Amino acid sequence: MKNSPVDELLEFVRFPSVSAQSSHAPDMRACAEWLRARLTRAGLDAQVVPTGGHPVVLAKSPHVAGKKTVLIYGHYDVQPPEPLELWETPPFDPQIRDGKVFGRGSTDNKGQILAHILGVEEALAEGDLPVNVIFLIEGEEEVGSTHLSGFLETHREELACDAIAISDTGMAADGYPTLSYALRGIAAMEVRVSGPKMDLHSGVYGGAVANPATVAARLIASLHDAEGRVAIEGFYDDVIPMAEWERQAAAESPLKDEDIARQTGVPELAGESGFSAVERIGARPTAEINGIGGGYQGEGSKTVLPASAFFKVTFRLVANQTPDKILDLAETHFLRNAPPGVRLKIELGHGGFPFGIDPNGAEGLAARRALEEVFGRKPALVREGGSIPILGHFSRILGHKALLLALASPDCHAHAPNENFPLANFHAGIRLNRAFLREFARTR
Image 1: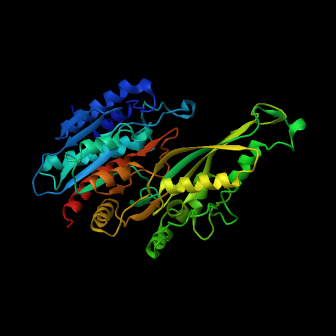
Image 2: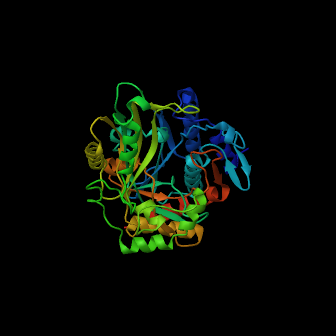
Image 3: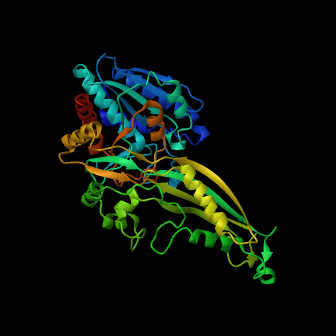
């Protein structure tokens, strides 16, 4: 007896395919094999392809000369489920409550990519597809897609396509069709401030020796001016201002500033003056402290002057900024502002370029028509604040920018306990796949 689409989603989510934890390597392989079998049953030529890490699942529809080709990307690996005690039900024992599937990976990205697979299967059962289809489903997205660029280079010819479609982004509001036409890039660094050769008695030496914790706090404070702008010299030199239509799209977004305040639980929003919160999140670059430490952390007092302190910072970038340039500017800024008596050790972290497409081009309009057909209203055009560095690899190696067709709800809890995926979005995703393939086939 054939399983229902929902039963198959539950089966998919039961795999504890946690790419970050080596103990789950057998589960990763089993999940990849499950996908290969499922894609084969859908009528595709599917295989599991080894990489230097977790394997890639690659599948193709029967190729028809003269038809356009769409590559659909997704991932089968998931985030670690910890902290387990905060889950209402076990993360890999998916449950349906209030019309949603609760389980790790239900939204990110198993529900979304399975919807595309089922959409293609439905279309194949009725006859020929309007386009040729390639599925590329990797197992390392949650650990930085370490081997994806090499895989794309090696398989460039067989991955040749006319467009790339991805459903791994969020809707502007629950059930609201959304095309994410831009994402921010990222650049990361860690700064360690060292002073004396050991922790010192703060009474004996305080006032005579620079305190690394105080210096770290001053360096952090130097990142922003009173208007909320990043105070690094040259930081905004390459920023492309928002076009008028983009500001209009942000103003018309169903996501409002008050929604962001409610979602985050803060009494008042903050940030760069002159922009709404929606604009700040998607269209303005930022500097954020992700971690800070130094000195005594235990219970009660311990009057030390710490030998060292550290902080971690990431910069979110917008077009036309580049990670290397921003990291160079930041390093210069910190070195210039560090007082005598301390030493800085700066470690550069990962980076990714900003991403953007023209939502008014032929491909963007095809995506917008498909979203409107399925959801019954014109889609929101969104610049998202997050980063997906792999998009740069697709553009550089395959020559196409991806179309980001959102299916994740705002309260999906991706990467957090109680991750969930609305069944309405799952079924809509199946219809969206079919609508998009039809619409893209008509583009010129």
